[in-house]
Length: 215
Image (cartoon, rainbow, N blue to C red; front, side, top):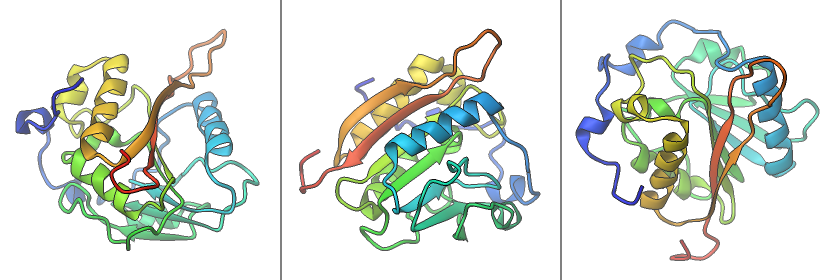
């Protein structure tokens, strides 16, 4: 997907009311099954810097942080304070609506890594958000976008609803490309294949360029 996925109609939603209304009530449910959660935890353990300062973007009541994995600080940014207050892994949290204000309320070069877990389908201005994630990452820091095949369909953007899983990976890769200043773009399929059905786990990630213009 080389053309910019920026047309307004791509980001129309069935429910276009303010997200603050939809998420005003806590929704303390997990969006992937236990085996998929275990796969996400293993990915974090293998990929995220130990003892790092990490941002959990579009956070809620669970971050799927690996048991015993050392961190300096895990900060959540989401829409419901009650959900994030109930998250045992967060050291701090910020209530912020990315669809209303895509600029993140953090200083440049604040975080060692940023993760976005099973929520990218709700972003209405994803390239602006990805660009600002790059700003708040420290050079070389990873930004990992994890997704499955579940969603709140009324809040997912039109382009996400229209695509299949492979095309979702291509779409997220296009977000990284058009945000610029990311390097080492890679996709992974971390679906825990077994004898029974497991929720799929897909990952698209890249790193902030260490030098200006490297990406």
